[in-house]
Image: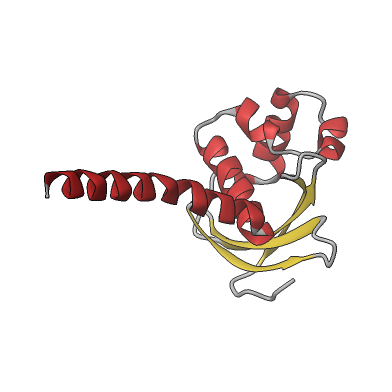
Length: 147
């Protein structure tokens, strides 16, 4: 009886220990989930004033225009205030190219000044399989228009 309880406990522990890995694996296989994750991590980096982390999510094309984290960070602060300091934000619609190489993600942002924005991200899949942010377009908008 005791052996059965120990066996069952070990079974449950190994099964439960494997669940986070399975959900993480499933997330990495979902292009829309991957794109949202990259955007969310970059927004978190902006909110933490972590220029190096924010820059790490930029595509090589963006990095060729802004060759270091400080220049990139200053550009975002000046030109993309709602992205740099979002009040509240929510993910809207998304679209993945048929080959899975490009993701488009809408993010609805309520800026600290009370203005609402629709922000459209373009992300490109990199050689390692991850997405990197390749461009952002902002539109003063209060409702989702799709992509």
